[in-house]
Image (cartoon, one colour):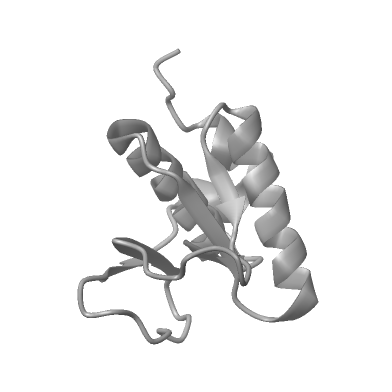
Length: 111
């Protein structure tokens, strides 16, 4: 998933967490622009890990060919492989109001 510092990025984290719980998948997180977004992605990875989900930050060592790419609404769509499904995520009002920890707390893990 790609995250920014807005509600769309938090919505992507929430949806990605829900999908990972359901499918048992690893979540790869990347920032959209620059250093601040990289810190936001690292924060998202740490929050998802605290929840018990398998999450990693995208870097040169991480494969960049996801099955599903979650993209915050309004973000430019990056080049994706032909088998990658790109989902534009629109934030809910709660995603706009809550901080990252509040959004992650709403991900049901079943445990």
